[in-house]
Length: 92
Image (cartoon, rainbow, N blue to C red; front, side):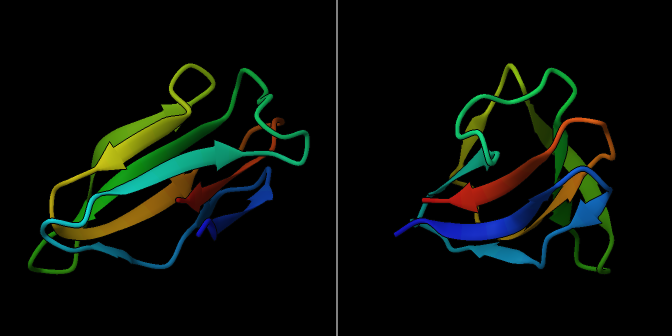
């Protein structure tokens, strides 16, 4: 069942923590009000939380890479970079 992770917008924003359990891969994908058509400037960084509570960038999503399947167990956050093009993130 699709679930909104980060609401559609243009400003900088972070999702709440997303926990991926071992053996349970999750697909995350960008979205916009226009559907799958995204502006060229969208960017959402994928951050991994360490044992001290700090976040480290491990990947990013954008107009050329709209989806990713995360298979590694961990706690992740999605961080939208402010641009003139809107986007959000959902999981499936």
